[in-house]
Length: 108
Image 1 (cartoon, rainbow, N blue to C red):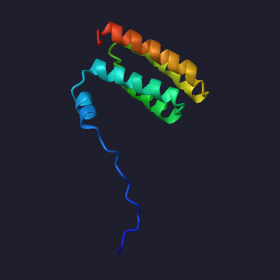
Image 2: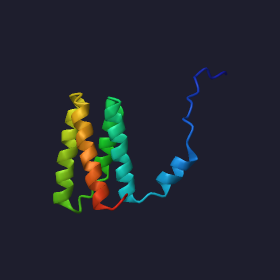
Image 3: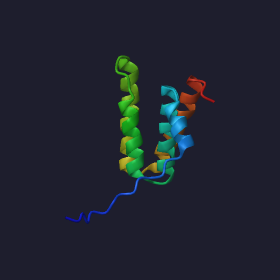
């Protein structure tokens, strides 16, 4: 029997990018997710922006309940902005969050 299903092409992976991500600290990975969210908002791509927010939510450590809940509320608000197609406002918030994150963890 012949299988007529179209083969899905996997994106070509940049080995340098793969190495960068694989060797990154947890704090650097969060910074990269903020970058992805900023880019998605600039491109008005709600799917990628929502994916980034979901990754940020999944990264929360609820051992620190008060801090995690604060970030969860911020991320929910960002999700709401994305759903309302307010990409400029969401991008500005992501940019501020990233700037603060980078400063807090000396990632520059």
